[in-house]
Amino acid sequence: MLVVMAKCAKSAQLQIRVSHKEKTAIQRAAVQAGMDMSAYVLSRVLSAPAAKFRSSVAACADAEGARFALAELNSLLSGFTRGELRDAIGSAPPLGLTPYILNYITAMVEHACAECAVALPAWTHAVAPMAEPVFGSTLQSLRLHLLTHSPPSFRARNIFIDATLGARL
Image 1 (tube, rainbow, N blue to C red):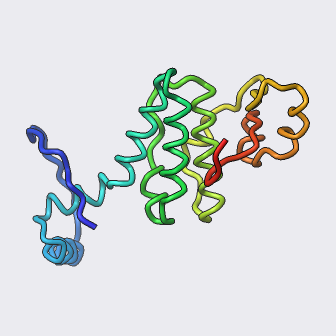
Image 2 (image 1 turned 90 degrees about the vertical axis):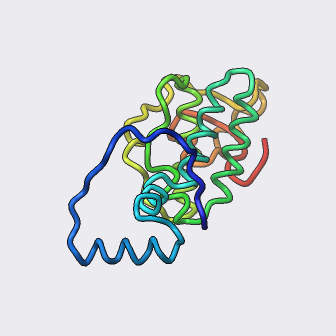
């Protein structure tokens, strides 16, 4: 998989210490990928799945389009392989999300991790659940159903819905 990085001015340098054996292995992998060492290392550190995840999460911050952005994020997480999921969710969502959106995203990530048998990223533990329950419908008659049928990751965050990853609300 070829990852295309945005071209921008390079104004900083990063040095890492590696053994001769590690450097040779990185050089060999870069040649096989058709890249120079810097481009290869950047493509591994700044993965395409992580960039897609960050972009999808950022779109959720827009209150007007949050519902659609969450659906897009749902599709993205559902389509990741185990390795892509692990790469994508490594860093925490940006600051500035509402507690509801942050909890919803966290619940989706936790659900995806459970489905793919991927360890939860550390940032999910730092997200406090909603103080008050939030229901996916305003109909009182549906509340019992939502309470009993919500996926565990959503229930743990005090969000009660009838569908999650791979399904549509």
